[in-house]
Length: 531
Image (cartoon, rainbow, N blue to C red; front, side):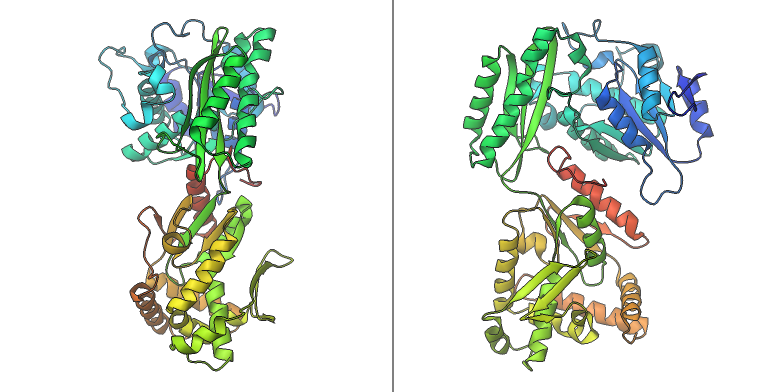
């Protein structure tokens, strides 16, 4: 096992060539390990993955080790493809990986990865529905080869985090599915496509283009950008969009493999853009086959976070929204504010006939304060703190159960979400308010855990704190009221992800939400600072 000096920081970078080298290096690690698999010929896109890999994980006190693999995998090349001519330059790869922040580089031979050869190799076959379209239609064995080598590498490396580029979107979707289906204990992070000055997505195959071919290839990202503009003007028909893209690419002299509009996660064909869609293309330019895509949105993404009272939705949702650059919509605060108003007017919270007239001309406002906190006002009264009182908490379920109340506030919430770009939390967000949200999460915790959190919140706000057993009983009673009411009862949407937060720090819950969001909404579609 040898090492080189990292040019930027003069730290040793281990060069590992055998499985034994890797195993010995792995045994010496104390903290988290982040892994970036590549086929070499590293470029700025790979370096951005390595920089991301070197960033510390949320809540971790120790910086991660970063391992980069360089292995040209013969299993993912079909007959007549460019296996022999694929660019290789290990010395340059080591330098680029080191400068970007790699700790070690694993550069095995084919015999190291497939010691028994590939004739009788156990292969990983991803679901047909994910690999039969797009690139899989023209490269039928490609994704089986990709999945097989990545699972082999993961078994050897045993990383905590796997980083993959969103440029190879179909590959990312397939590997996420394979890792999930096999129950492997690691996170996957997709990273946005990195582009060169002319807009061309960074690719090892770009270096094989002549100057004139390079100019020709730049028509691919330009044509995709033109389609994005069309969608923003209201054009959402798949046939029109793919026809426009095909004509522009062929007009530039590029040979088409495919142009398709598909659902980003199932990769099934779409007839129109509705929510989030993927427009993908593959072309041949000179000696290189190039792929690229763009994400099309009929509106900005929506995250719906449901769950029972006291599960910590408001705290983590507010922080998550800030981190992702989304608008925070606390629908629970709206129901609490109305409950406060009902009490102030002396009306019976359980009587729909008494509550209904109070909805006429209702002026309920949510706004952001100087420190980013949500301010709540109703009919000119600032009730930000008042709505968290035990008196309001005790009766909010009664007010929220009335059909007239749900109808009025749901309509207001849906109006707020017409343009998207928000994260909303409450008790029927994913089922009744935003059933077409890109991400639905059912955030929950045991009654005992929620009682403990409620006691802490009451103490912090200066209210009297009842015994935990009493709080737990109140929470159980409220759960029953919320889940058994006739109108919009509390329930988990069929397509929601359940997140049980017992024993999780706030930072860990936020990171889990970020990971779930990025599985549904790639950075190429929605960039956000700080992620």
